[in-house]
Length: 460
Picture 1 (cartoon, one colour):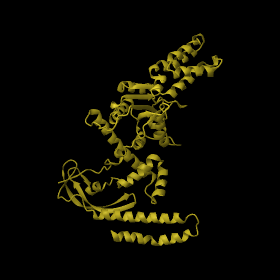
Picture 2: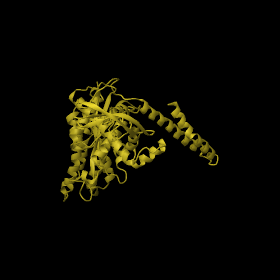
Picture 3: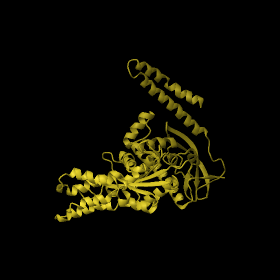
Picture 4: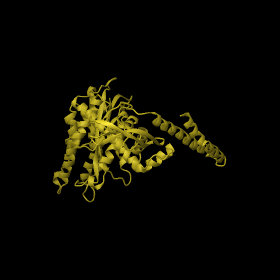
């Protein structure tokens, strides 16, 4: 190995000398040229070590027999060479090939031993591609990887495939965990002090889709068709204290996230699992915050009836403004009237809002004005028990859904809603899975699972 490394270094000595000489004539670029040469040399040394490790590592299966996944005894049929993509460049090695005559399948146990994927990638290579692809458009990711790593690692298509593959494997692991917790087979062990208050925030946002993903769906576009699919977002975090002024303070690094294209029932199952995994059933004061969407409160009332349910305050204020717009042409001072309604809202006096609107006797006016006003008021009458903001503030609780709305932007919009982007669900869901897991600090579900699809073998 020493000889190979020495050879790699020696091959770059001349380049060091040439770049150093050129640097004197290029003010401001002296170190940049030498840095590039040094990085290339480091890559060559590392690649030589990988190559020698693969060649000298031997076979992981030394027994006389090997069995396939169905338990059939296989036979060794010689050796086959393979070139794999690593984080430092391509490397080649030769490994033993086994074949099952019953299943008519073949495999190399060494591939699984080294963690080589069916696409011929190492774990380190896949990690670089997925980390870039999950946060940047695939074409930009290819340029970024080249600039940071100093070698041509992949094409945009390869980055897309790898990101989807890693994300799909993480989703499968997450779904398996959800199923185990749901059935009680896996009981999360939560240690440490129990926070006083725990929040579960729910929202949804649209992701732009290719036409066949929205076929038959009605939308708000000019053509009456939907061009997006809803991504349901969940955000959980805790609160242990308030500021001296009584403002709530979110516990650092306590947020975890969910994102899914599932319907409300599927999303609810994931929320319940995350609720259990986080140990929220131990928290004295659970709180659910959302806007006025009925599906959100359907989940909250069914799964978390013991929690305090709060309608996002800023959504409620927007509905006050929308309500006044229905009849503002009848008011001498619409702004003052709006402030009066908001004052009622701040005190949780929803009956006061209704009474003040009733003083206008809107039923006397022709047309659908009274009907429109009635529908606007239904938002408040249906959420009266979720709008006691004076009580929530007095307790030092959050009353806004800002964290989950921020998650809609950072998890979905920042990656999926850039100019010209159109997705399939199978293409975007793995990306969103990776984005939620990394932002939840659950990296082990991504990088500690076995993403290789090479058929497992047993040696005896």
